Image 1 (tube, rainbow, N blue to C red):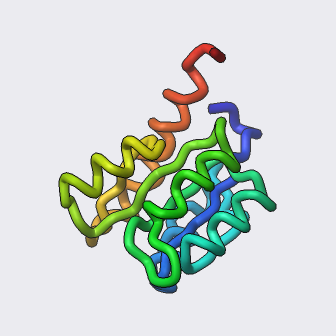
Image 2 (spheres, rainbow, N blue to C red; image 1 turned 120 degrees about the vertical axis):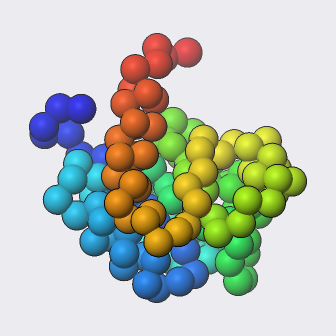
Image 3 (cartoon, helix red, strand yellow; image 1 turned 60 degrees about the horizontal axis):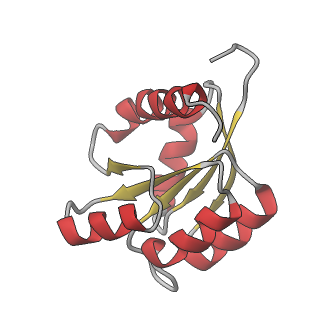
Length: 133
């Protein structure tokens, strides 16, 4: 990635501490958190408004689940990355999210903050390296 590139990130997670931790974790990198919200419906609205490059979307939330919001978020940012955040590895839910357009998954765990920037960097580089279709 070029030094002057900024990757705009929307964080959708119902846990404030997770949102704050991600914001802290990505601070000082090419990833800039441009919006944060706590449920899928608000995530859809912000994705449409902000047009982020990356959406970090919790799978399970109140009001509207992340997997329920995923198709509309995918439609709002068709060229962006949608990375699901989860504390579960329930196979059926993961497969459902894949079918609905999720690009990747990040498991919430104690070391998530240490690996999140590395994972997003790899995903973003891979996305940028693919020829346009």
